Length: 121
Image (cartoon, rainbow, N blue to C red; front, top):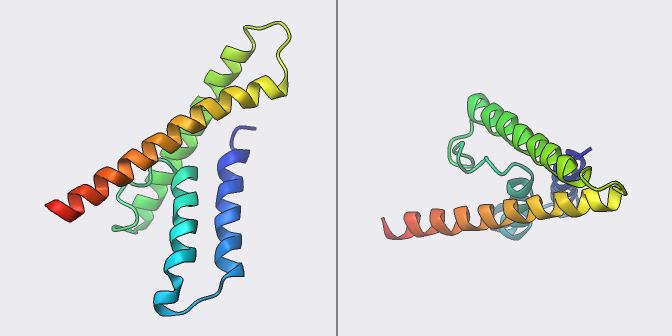
């Protein structure tokens, strides 16, 4: 169930790329937004070397580790929620949002670190 969030982000990124066809440098803005959505869906993609090293090994590594991370987030969220007797889906998604917020902060911090390293080193 928790994999619905990253799957939705990937589908939204795909929709953005299909709705905004482009050529050359005009692809910058749609591709940047779509890539950001993919990074939020696959939080380990930067650590796996994407987008610089695109190979089946890197893609598989990013996909498997990201799925594992989201499954762990779902497991932890369900454990925290079911401590309450009146657990609902809304409380589950509230816990998932907490972990998703951590993913967003981590991806943004990783992006800032990546830009800093690429710019100054």
